[in-house]
Length: 136
Image 1 (cartoon, one colour):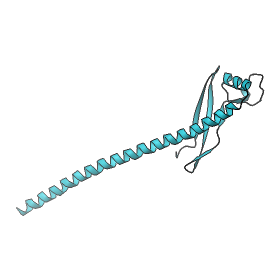
Image 2 (cartoon, rainbow, N blue to C red):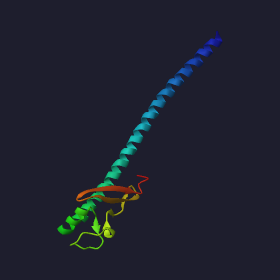
Image 3 (spheres, rainbow, N blue to C red):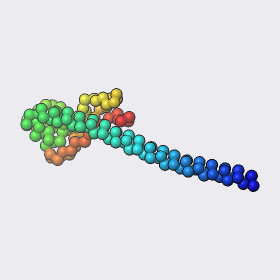
Image 4 (cartoon, rainbow, N blue to C red):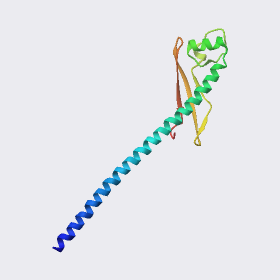
């Protein structure tokens, strides 16, 4: 009889341990999930802040152009022409389609955003890429 009471007590301890381990596992899963989502959201927001900053810089760069140069560059979907000639179309060897924005520091780490223009005949698209963003 004494032996079965010890077995019942051991079974109860094992059952309570299994229930507590299950609860702890569920809590840990929920906590890890929340921290992962939080980290991803922070990374997306940080990248968007950097891209918005570069887009503002590109807008200032484009806003400073005279109308003739602006029209020529949009027609050719280029950032600028190396020659500086405002009357003629830019030759292929002098077309610049990428612009590297000023480096920004975010949370103590420096990042650079590169704007790239593509397309043709005025159907232009600017894409932004965050450089050195492995720790963002």
